[in-house]
Image 1: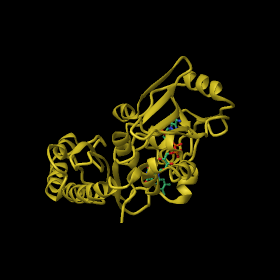
Image 2: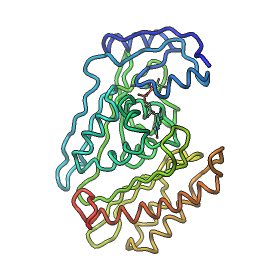
Image 3: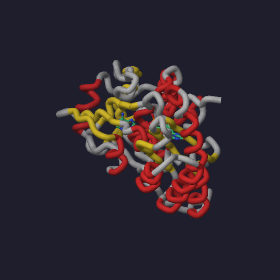
Image 4: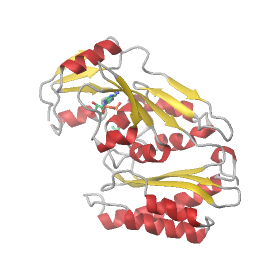
Amino acid sequence: MHAAPFAFHAARDLKDALEVLAMSPGAAVLAGGLSLIPELRSRRRRAALLVDINNVPGLDGVTALAGRPGGPRPVLRIGCTARQADVLAVAARHPGHALLAAALRTMGTALVRQRGTLAGAVAQAAPELQMSALCSVLDIRVTVRRAADTHDRAARELYAEAGPGPGELVAAVEVPGCRSGEGWAFLRAGRRTFGAHLGGVAVRLDLHPDGRCRGARIAPFVAGHDGTALAEAGASLCSGPVDTQAVRRAADLAARTVRTRSDALASADYRRHLVRVLVRRALVQAVDRTRGPFGEVVS
Ligand SMILES: Cc1cc2nc3c(=O)[nH]c(=O)nc-3n(C[C@H](O)[C@H](O)[C@H](O)COP(=O)(O)OP(=O)(O)OC[C@H]3O[C@@H](n4cnc5c(N)ncnc54)[C@H](O)[C@@H]3O)c2cc1C
């Protein structure tokens, strides 16, 4: 199928992109195009105008802002045309961003990551995909620009609003990492083809040296769930030592409180079972990782 006719504008600079977006309420931002173009071609989506931001200078940076031991978490500031492959290359060099690196490695293939942008993966606001859970577990923030103003907001708000509004451009994404001593895990089930995705889970765990839990985020990404962290399951870990029983209890609570949906790939019940299994495995990995600096597994 062919896309419905649309106009095309290759933005010269950021000001140009924002002005054109402000004047055209039916416009869509074109980044890597890996999600947008198939949507237009299948006519699940229409856009009167595509504003191509790929040649806008100065938007492709990936900057690592260091955290201090015991201090604030390290942060990656990612411009909106930075490719997922470039982000992965930087994240893989910084132990504090190992959770982001693990998530990116599950997103499509190396070829997909060469083209797709991280900002595009957030802006598409798909609740059942990896970035949705990562936004909940890492408190990712976005810088949203309009012709008239700029504001920073929690990336999760974009999911609640099904993406940026008319005239808005996600100019940058800020991804905090893990502090030294925090544990994390990222697990996904399904093939790497787009659409053959069964579900997954992201976990971040802050354990006291005596084994008690100071905080836990458990966020599944699975059809039917909105990608938010499961508060009850996370809180259940903080009521005593994080042992095998506590992990099982949290996994059962996660399976009970997650919302799942059936589709051609799997039933809602199967996905609920998957969440129980993945949360249990992820928590075991995360606890192991709390024993090494920046969450390295100590063997
Ligand atoms: C084989 C295959 C497998 C894939 N697997 C996965 C996967 O496992 N997980 C996953 O998350 N994705 C997956 N994808 C999608 C891929 O990662 C996309 O690149 C990504 O989701 C969107 O990034 P993009 O740069 O291509 O955005 P585009 O397709 O250009 O845009 C996506 C949406 O976001 C909007 N947008 C983009 N950038 C901005 C911005 N800066 N400001 C405002 N709005 C913006 C667009 O208007 C559009 O609505 C897969 C794709 C393929 C082809």
